[in-house]
Length: 243
Image (tube, rainbow, N blue to C red; front, side, top):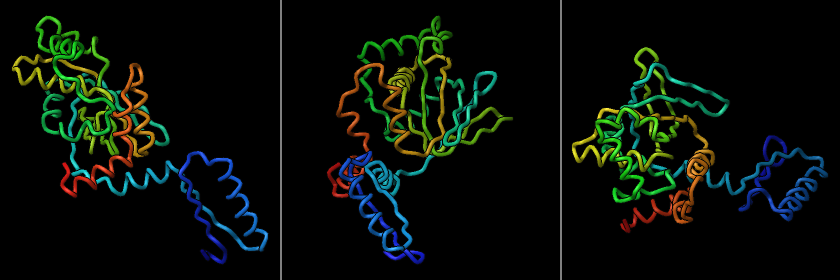
């Protein structure tokens, strides 16, 4: 492809990183063009980059936004070149309401499914959340909830986070258990730590979900269902009426 008085080479690889054979082919092509005296511009589209393109171009979730109120004395904020992390304590009732309203979408990037109220751990969460004596310790007993979002706005004067298109990557069991407790009419006024990570890179988002859930075994089917290419397949099948 002629570009800016030279050539632009787009090299596509379905592995990441490049295989030895791929590196040889790429180096050979670049050398042949450079030997002609022409300028060359090149880009590599590897497996991860292709997955990113598919994921970002085909993801068509309806945009939504939630407000999270800081119930503690201050909000912890940590920023880096590609992310910002906010740590707050939220009302259990507030989180149960978020779960009720956005249950069909907010857990889409979580590698674990809800294990149900009969699961002994979830049953324990419900018992603590509905206990007048233990509710004061809920935030001490629970690991907390982690969400990722492409955009977070922190309103300092009101101690409030406005979180755009949040996805719960850790805490699916907790939030659904809180919702069950609220449906039973027994959810007490407690609090739990919530970490919100502002991040856009889909590969890092997926890694956050996997690494935060690596303490115990994760079924391969859960991981596969979280891959961008499988998400696209689900969308295509949905258009054909299979869901």
